[in-house]
Image (cartoon, rainbow, N blue to C red):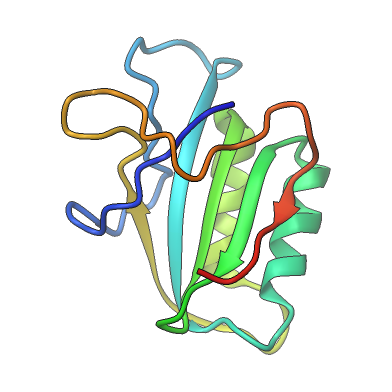
Length: 131
């Protein structure tokens, strides 16, 4: 299992995914990405869109709605696949209007993985209950 940070501090808008790849590595290195997508992203099939896209890209992770109306995504996989998911999230499904994609840190300030909620690296990309 891989844990991801949930702090909103340090959120930013990056054109490329922020990854927790402290050791560097090439395009095939397994890295993590944590996004929060804002706009009209709930009640438009956004979570299922992310799930289908992530599965097609062979990523592991989860997606869920947040109480503030945004959608949160945590994914692990190859850097090019994560970049493709990031681009897909910036557009969303038909009916969605994405206003902002925040890339959150995937490790805590001390460089340690945050254990909650973990990504089950043995299972498919899931849809979690609302947070």
